[in-house]
Image 1 (cartoon, rainbow, N blue to C red):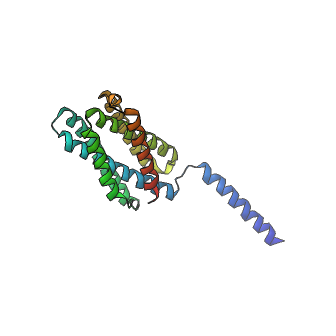
Image 2: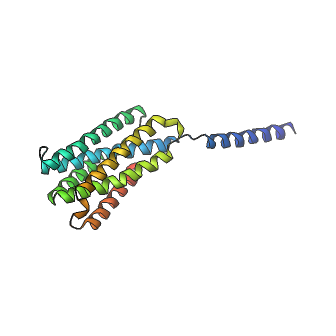
Image 3: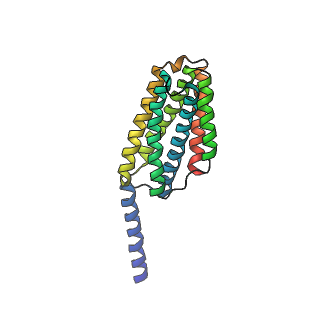
Length: 197
């Protein structure tokens, strides 16, 4: 009888502690790893997209200077995620070599199509990344306030890049709607894959 009473008390205590832990918002380790891994990969890819565009337009052209501004912010982002990968001991995606080639190719190919197409690429990528960062802010618990602050700032930078693209007539690029959808789908696919691999 004593055993039944103790067993019942232990079960009640476990149920109570589960309720308490779910009400205090903490981030599961797996979610934290996915966030850092995919953001590291994404920022790495973004630096390569801008490298590809700058290779075509040059750093000193009017658009080249605008792209360099965005590239500098992306470099700040990747530097931070390089730190976070080490700090939190997160394995980076195994696909970085692929994102290196794919990012550069996307940047260079859209730049070869013209300034508006390059900006259409920026708009499509940054739209997806802005939404992605917002989703992450909702996933992160109160135990990672500094990371939330970082992601919030980076989201704002990405949305600034989106707006710069719009201001530079991205929507007037030939085939804008189709190009945007293809690039957005590519970004979403890369995000899904990079979380796990």
